[in-house]
Length: 231
Image: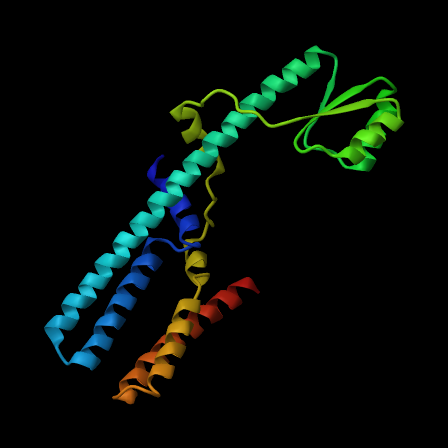
C-alpha cells in the first residue's frame, strides 16, 4: 500500500496517534526513565545509555506491533474478498434456480412482508446461522426458507486486496491540528500518580514529586484539549 494509506492505518493501530505523537511518547518516557535512573544511581553516563536502550526498545516494540496489525489487516481483507466472491456466485446460482436470496438475514417482520408480497411458493435463501423461528414463519405463510453456511470464493489478487485497503482506509480530518488536540493524556496521568506514590517510600522524594507533577500537568493539559475539542 502507498504511504498515505499506511499512515492512516498506523494511526488506527496506535489509537489515533500520528508519527509526531508516537515519537513524543517514546522520547518522553525514555527521558523519564533516564532521569529516574540518574536519581537512583547518580551516574550520568549509565543513565543516558539505559535511557537510549529504552528508547530503542520502544521503537522495536512499535514496529512489531505495526507488523502484527498489518498482517491481521491483510488476512482479514483477503477473507472478506473471498466471502464476497462466494456470495456473488451463490446469489447467481440461487437466482438461476428461481429462488430469492435475502442478505443480510431479515428480521421477522421483514420476512413476513416479503412472503405476503411475493406470494405462496416463494423459495427464500439466507446465508448464516439457522434460525428456526424464521423458517417456521415462512412455512406458515406458504413459503420456504433455506439457510446456507458461509463458503470461500477464489483467492483475490494482490491488486484487489490493495484496492480494498485503500478504499477502506480511515479518513483523516481535514485539519491536522484537530488530531493533535485529541491525543489522549491517560498515560501521563497514570505515570504521574505512580511517581507520586513512589515518592512516599523512596529517597529524594522531592525529585519524584517534581516528575510526578510534571506528568500530571502534561496529562491534564492534553485531556483538557481533548474535552474542549469535543464541545
